[in-house]
Amino acid sequence: MTTFLLVRHGQTAWNREERFRGQTDLPLDDWGLQQADLVGQRIASQLEPAAIYASSLQRTLQTAAVIARACGLHTTIHDGLLDIDYGAFAGLTPEEAARDYPDVARAWRRAPHMALFPDGESLADVRDRAEAALEEIAANHPDQTVVLVTHVVVCRLLLCAVLGLDNDHFWQFDPATASISVLRISGEGSVLVSLNDTCHLAAGVPST
View (tube, helix red, strand yellow):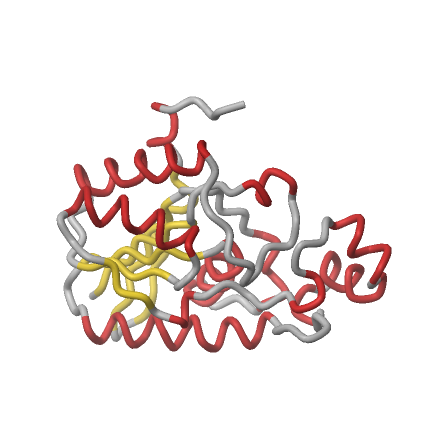
C-alpha cells in the first residue's frame, strides 16, 4: 500500500483574484510562501514521507522545495501532475470568461466534465494523465508515503478517481491552498483517509 499526501500548492496572486491559472507559470505570493513553510513543517514533523513529486510550474516547485528541505529530500518533477491547460481562458476572471466565451463558461459552471476550453484540455485529458501518474508512482513506492504537490484541478480529479466518481462530481471537492488530503492506494483498491486538512495553517496569519 502507498500512502499519498495530496498537497495543493500555496497561494498565488491569481488565486486571490480568482483568475483562471492553468499552466500559466505563477510564483507564490507572500502568504503562499508562509503556507509552504507551514505545510512543510507539518509533513516533516508528523508524516515522514519517502519521496516528493511535483508538477513543473514554479508555484508547485516552490511549495515542494520547502517541504523537501524540511524533510531532507529532493523533488522529482512529474508532468502527470501538471495543471489543466485552460487555453484561451488562461488569465481571465470568471466574469471575463462569461463575457468572451459564454457557452463554455456556462458549461464549466454547470457540467464541467463537458466543458471544452478553446485551445486547451478537458477534465478527461487531465484525469487520464493524473491517474497514470498516481499508478506509476505507487508502483515505484510500495509501502511508502509520498507527497504529491499539485493543483486544484488535479486534486479534485484524483479525489474523484479514488472515490470511484465520474468527473461530473468535480465541483463537490474544494481543496484549499496548502491543504493535505491523504489517499491510500493498494492492489485491493483506494481509500480516502482525510480531506482538505489545513490545521497547520492556523499557526500563520495571511498577509494583507
